[in-house]
Length: 130
Image (cartoon, rainbow, N blue to C red; front, side, top):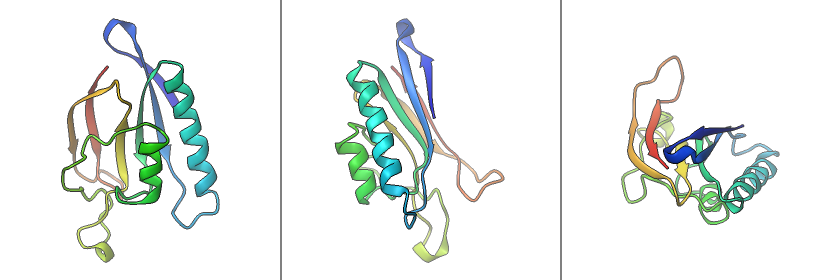
């Protein structure tokens, strides 16, 4: 899902909201390829992009790496300790599988996590400037 928002000087920001297939899903590879292709298309057209959602991908995994290398996205939390957005006891405090990633022309002013509100995931949010 893509949605355009207007920022400074009416410059559009294309926001991709995603709920990716589970890691064991047969559709996972194709889904991420389609998503990355769509992000690259918007970036090449000169548009600013952000990707938000439950990516079912840890920040140290290969899918996450593809989003950064092939998709040209960056993680505003890079260099900081991962946060547990999906608290599953098997993985200690949990895993970070929910993310906000942005293109090179998008500034992240603030990035936080919140409480679990009627979900098995914690709330994440960011204040973006473009």
